[in-house]
Amino acid sequence: MSAMAAEPAVTAASLHCINCGGPIQLKGFAHTLTAICPSCGSILDTSTPLLRIVQAGQTRQQIHPSVPLGSRGKFDGHEWEVIGFQIRTMTADGVRYDWAEYVLFNPYRGFRYLTEYDGHWNVVRTESRLPVLQGRRARLDNVSFRLFQTGQAHTSYVMGEFPWRVQLDEQVYFSDYVSPPEILSAEQTANDSEITWSRGRYVPGKEIWKAFHLKGSPPPARGIYANQPSPSAHKLGSIWKMYGLLLVALAALALFVRIARPGTEVFRGSYSFNPRSKAEASFVTPPFSIQGRDENVKIEMATDLDNAWAYFDLALIKVDDGHAYLAGREVSYYHGHDSDGNWSEGKAHNSVRLASVPAGRYYLRVEPQMDNNANTPVMNYTVTVRRGVVIWSYFLFAVIFLSIPPLLTTWRRYSFERARWQESDYSGFPGVKATA
Image (cartoon, rainbow, N blue to C red; front, side):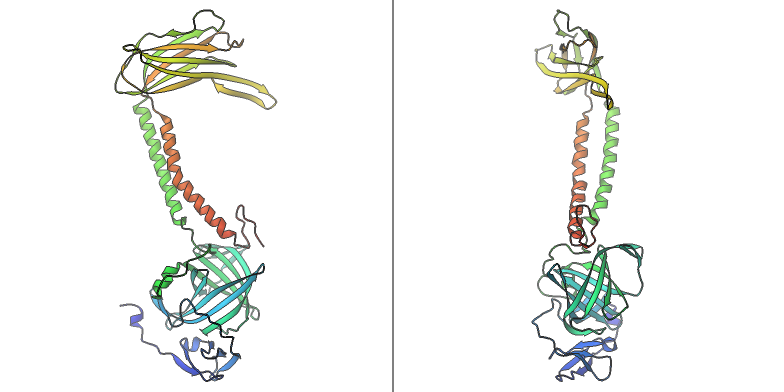
């Protein structure tokens, strides 16, 4: 059984407008302080037994609330009825902005409010507690709200009934603090020194339509609202957590592969090269065996170059049929000292990897070349051939690939927040200039 089913039915109080005699039903009972006559539009003070006209009939505009008066909807497990509606207006930089506010009433739960601007909805309740203000921050229930905007608005249209004394053109000063999906607002009328605090929660329009059983679809939300939650906000933490776990798993896999497959050395030889010698520079190594399935082969050159460079023409040649795998690599190492301190460039070693080399007997043809540098008149070097080495670039590509989802989600959230704070008077957001 629902909460409302256990509550006895309550009937509305009936009155008549003292201006036109039209009937007025008060859904808020003694809580209602102001009612608008549906016939002539007069704003009536209902706090006394004899109704008093606060303002004569307002201009009857053809305004139809998206959620009609008398509609009933369920929030937080309780049913609420729409008993009042007003439009508030403000002007900023010569542009007029209107938003709607609905009064919701439950005779056993009191009042709630709905606000709507450009298709963005909030369910609002008044706060009896005062937040702690610190500069442009407000803290309530361990939630830190950030000042988004301040301004002055006036009531431009009313209908239904209200638990406060409402008047057309009544001025109100407001400050909005946000911590999406919540908003904390302070309001103060021009004739009242008391500040009223309220706390709202962003609700998508489709949930409003569902709660009130409205036909059709809600108007689409335009732009980004002050406390509209980022679509990627709830995903960001879990995505980065998953990314971290995958990196740990990838690192563990890389360590396992490194231990399990250190690369099998199939040949090593040490040589010298004198660039001034007239002897043939190229030579071939003794034959060696590469066994197992087709795998990569890595040829490493380690030299004692010092402020010099060398180039190696390489050919891995199969003994049986003479098929050759050609490659070449430069090795260079320079260093020195200048006004900025010590510097170095390059390395005295390099390597080349050949992909998918089949098993068999091979020899290596090596042809070194070198500049005639006095610092290294003769180059001593070692050539090493390894089979089945780990290709670390694959792991690097995996890291880059895994980084795409969290980085893309982070960028989307950043773009969303930047667009949000472009509408703020107090941005402080990188790349967004505050207007106040």
